[in-house]
Every structure is written in structure tokens, then in C-alpha cells.
Length: 168
Image (cartoon, one colour):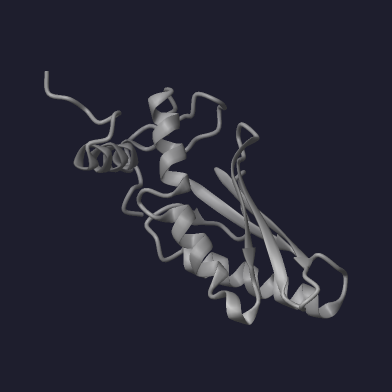
């Protein structure tokens, strides 16, 4: 990918685990609130829509059937409202450390707009949830693929972030 390490570069490591971390990955799992077929179908549909919406961004890389543990886990559970609509409770956890990174609820009814698009934008936007978490982890000493770290640090410098490199 565009942020992958050159073929001869050593694998990067995080400071929290011994797992190699190239470019952050995410796995999505939306669970129905009930066992009925309609709830399962809606959960499957939301799962596919959120994966598709996240895949439009440069990172994280969406993994559907992770071979290794993904960097982040986006999970959601649905609960019904009396009016027939549903609420989707979404959390993101940093999988290697088990840290809760973000939690929010979204309405999934016809009048509530596009929950998958809203979720993806808040999560994967350049200055969104994951970008902020990754910047924090890099500042704390975690390492990613050199090319990916360079992009994160360059974006911080362009934005004038407090962790941006300074001329001495």
C-alpha cells in the first residue's frame, strides 16, 4: 500500500506489544440486538456499509477476516427504539492494548441520515478518532512503518500540531 514499508525495511513494532505494525488495520463487527432475522439482516448490512465507507480512506486498512489481530476493533450493537428505528452503539478499541479509544451512539432509521458514512468520517478522517490516537501513540513511543509515520508527522506539521517537528 502507499504507506507500506519498502521491501527491504525491517518490520516496525509497537511499544505495547511485539506484534508488527505496518499501517493500522481495523476490523468491523456489528451485532444485532435481537435474534430475529430482520435485526440480523440490518446488522449485516451496516457491517458491509461501514467497511465500504472506511475503505474509502487511506488508513486504516479494513480487514474482514483478520489473519493477525487488527490494530483496531470497531464493534457495534443495536438496540430498538419504540418508534421502530434502531440505535447503534459503536466502540473502537485498540486491540493490542485493549484500550477503549472511542464510543458513540448513532440512529440508524431512515430519517437519521447515513450512520455508516458518519461513522467512517469521524473515525478515519485525517484528524479523526484513529488519526488522533495514532499521533498520541507515536508521541508515546509506538512505532509504525517509517513511511506511514512520516505521513502522520507531516500532516501534524502542516496543521501546526503541538507534536509537530520544530526547526532548531
